[in-house]
Image (tube, rainbow, N blue to C red; front, side):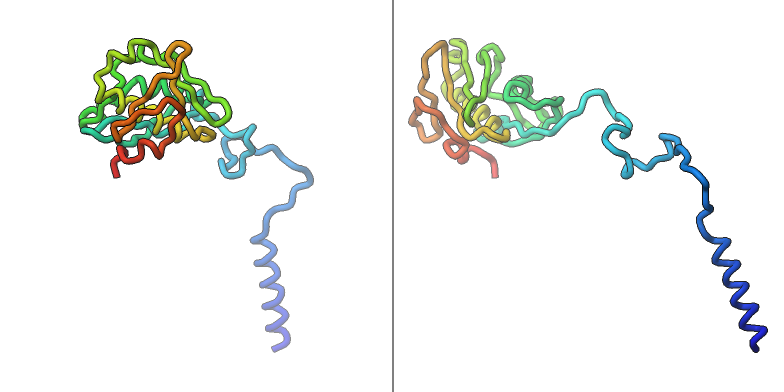
Length: 189
């Protein structure tokens, strides 16, 4: 029996030793293509595209309300790039679901800048050419879209160097900055 246990111990030792990882005397370079992505550091990760993108929420008109859609836009995300995407209007697929923009003419907006949590949208005098009902929806599109950005809580509007009154959903108007709460009732559930 002793001979049997000794033979079993030797056999087990040989099997365990043969299943181990081989030892190497020095490190060797692993080809880049054989490194799993999860083990890569940022500087060795393969580039999947030259421009990185991030999804942003845009608000478009659906009947007499606003609906939120997601678009991918190139980094860096700024108020200006988001407004440019909004001015480009809904995609063909979105239009097929009856989404539209109340800002039919991108010339109605001049610029947008953010300071201290307030986005200031400079409108051009042609904004007045937008029908009254669509003016309120256009303002709501801008307010809901801009306040979805990190760091923007309120939106102000200017034409030339004056602050125009902006229409609110309840029929009144505001000459100060407005927030998403002012237009929340227009958002589709």
